[in-house]
Image (tube, rainbow, N blue to C red; front, side):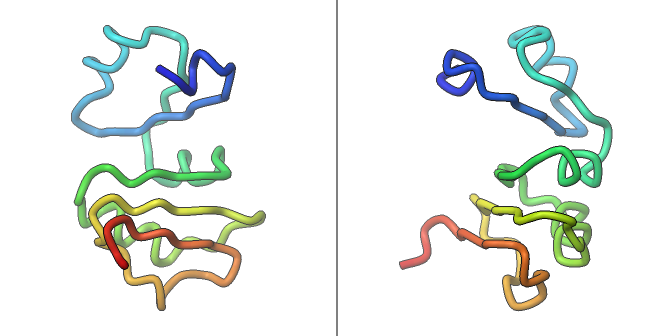
Length: 93
């Protein structure tokens, strides 16, 4: 909600929760139907689900711009990421 209140563009993808998200957030965020689309439309991606689909796509993704990945589950192997991707694994000291 804080991001919405600050007029930031938010693009969301969750294969299981889009209907519930739409009922809560309506059109205040944009919804896409693949992780590829989410990566292409974003400068910062927050991984909040530990899905192998996310891991596979992100580790092989080659961005056309600087991209930051915040990994809440630490499922991504940062050594496999393209050099244009900044990786932040939460909970790693």
